[in-house]
Length: 355
Image 1: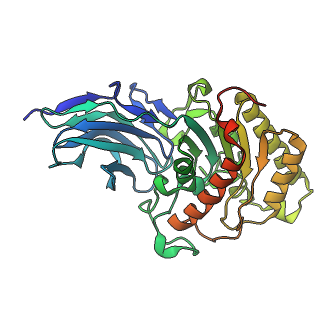
Image 2: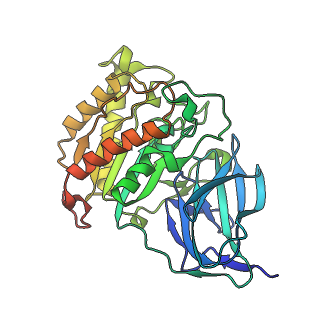
């Protein structure tokens, strides 16, 4: 039997997320929640990809006819992964998505359908659009360790991380919105802080405008902001920034704290310049952190004097759990955040500039 090759540029494939291209020209999935969606007729389907591992064990996720599954990826090299076989006759739906952050990237080469298989048009992506700038919580890291709800994380090698269960993606689904999730485990706002890529420690100020950003991959590429225009931008930074020194807690009016506030304000103004029409929501999460960081964000929000920027705190802000959010805790956050965004009115989803 001969497989039917479905190239990555097939017009019936729908992509969502900040997806770039590798050095061979293939589509490269870097950020969590990025996905390709399709509908097809066929008895089996497989994906052709090449994994580029940086750390941890790496997994891809997919949802076939409503059932979610995952598969381990090789540390490096090309792989053919069966996503479904012995399928019933008729049409099937599939979403193949990036479960994890830049602990790995993968180059997507296409799908293989069983002989006689073919794609059909699938439902379009939601017209509402949101974008999130965040850290591991926003990426859904360790979300599937449900036995550890409200507790520290268990030992793991990436197997519990699933962006589908991040509050970011749950919020997007509640709002019926497309999502670009610019989130990275361990990241802080500024270089030299947080946990991402020690000993250099790379911050969101450097990552935010990249399609490919992880230095271990050996190359970087810029993102074209014209390719995606969010109606709502959520900035969830300020938790990893307390490492290696919690200067906001220790000396709220000290030089380092003042410098961080200036950089945070500059970052928000930069996003406003890029997205003049968007609502911007400043927040953190329910992961335990000192409330001085939320106080600092409130202070910056007051300085901005921008009616399109809002500061939002959760009911259990900074006090909900010492470990990463598990699925039910992410649901809790998503419910509060989506309710808040909906309270801003239907007009925020207009494509015309309103601020």
